[in-house]
Image 1 (cartoon, helix red, strand yellow):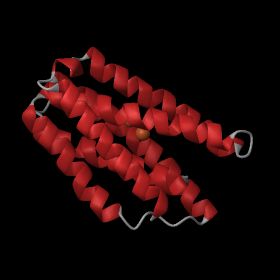
Image 2 (tube, rainbow, N blue to C red):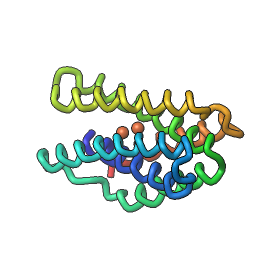
Image 3 (tube, rainbow, N blue to C red):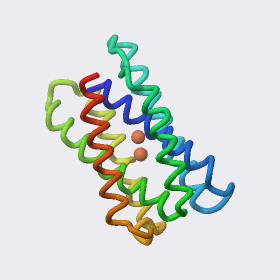
Image 4 (tube, rainbow, N blue to C red):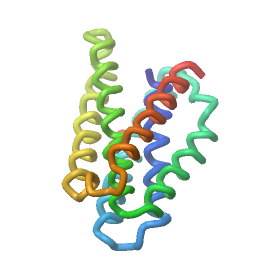
Length: 163
Ligand SMILES: [Fe+2]
Ligand SMILES: [Fe+2]
């Protein structure tokens, strides 16, 4: 669980880094993204610490998520500000489902991890809602774009669980 969660939060920081590299500085979307990126950094730092504490090795796919995350962020931001927000909308929708499933799986077995996941899940949902409120759904091709990104997230989660 820690391996896939750390990979996901790492990927999120890379997506937002890609978007920030492309978005005009100080445009409203860039400000939103910068705030969310800071929270992802905090999520990542917490999972990094838990992994070190519990001696879990990171996914071997880290270099792939580095590049793929950045590329996804940059590509969506190049399409439009709304597409960048739609990317957040899609990613956070899958992360929310992923964390919800983990919390069901953990049950009462690991209160420490569960409380972190619960706290992060709230922030991921807030990211999704922020993106929608700022116009994610106005992105051209929103249904197809978000469906594709969500499918990509599910694949990334699936393989990061294993390797
Ligand atoms: Fe996060
Ligand atoms: Fe997030």
